[in-house]
Length: 453
Ligand code: PLP
Image (tube, rainbow, N blue to C red):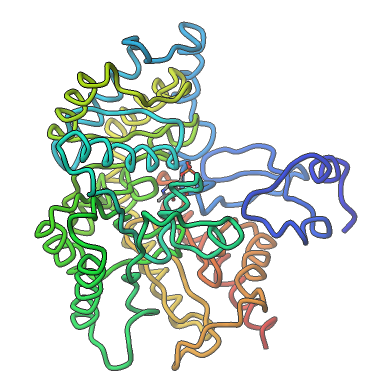
């Protein structure tokens, strides 16, 4: 198809993240124009089920009038103010109070950013600041996992454990050490049970800490369920086992809830779903249902006390972003959390989850699907060349990307993470819409199978 005028103008002017830049000139970008509920339309009028909530973020779907009104009202009242030099705004206070109320562990204060990457960058800095404040200047290394995704700034991309965020970017920086990914289907060894696998991961972690020196390791960062790594669900016993090691070496646990947070996995927090007891928490995305950019770092008492002491030593707390906790994002965030509560979004998620997971797990019977996995309204099916041996497709064949293209043809937007085809629909999705989503998904899988063979 010839490119439209808008596609040409886009290609001449815009850089597209996470896109094969060498190919997009031929394929052109998909230009999105409008959205309502779980649906979006492109500029040619074609409608899609947006089964990824954009980038795992529009939890309340598109066109929610209450959220829109909250934003407009705030812009009219006070379009901008910051919280540097002791200033504050009411929406930030309301949102911080609400976050503390729903937090999975006791929280003292909330530090606002504009994004998940900034939240995770801030986590690293706070851990360093804290350890300096309490007289442990050597304890600075951060452990992350292979296949993790924690953002793209220099520090958060270092936490990320994906090759395309490191190769040719001169990353990761060497304060980050990556340990084994807890995805049993891919990283379990032949003959190993899930229990053996967890025991091996614990040994790997112990060895890494011993090699680096426990007095140099400050924190371990983890998403409860790894989203952008391919929706990788760890074994149930993984976090309790890992956490025993961390506790023994006085290593903090940073919980990245940027995707998992706010009812997505069937609980307010992924930490609750995966049995994790974090010290600090990063959130963003569904914090505002993505109606405005916002991130939040949730800080426990013992860290805030150390921050106060350090500030007394130097004269101030030297960290903050111009748009961190922007009144627009904060007002929309406070309204989003209010809506999650008053519309019982958690109950709704729990209500549609059995249908979602039943249809998801049924995909495992398809000849192309090696594993179908998920929790709550978050899932993925991993396409493989051979189901028995779990042999993956050659990445160069582009099977995942082609499958996503077929899905788009059938009016379904998904995310191909390699050959894992991810789903994260707006949490307002109904049972009928779940059914329609999977009908389209299955049609595209069949078409992919025909294309592969
Ligand atoms: N952490 C996780 C778990 C994420 O999935 C993402 C983004 O997808 C980030 C951090 C980075 O957030 P942002 O893109 O807002 O910087």
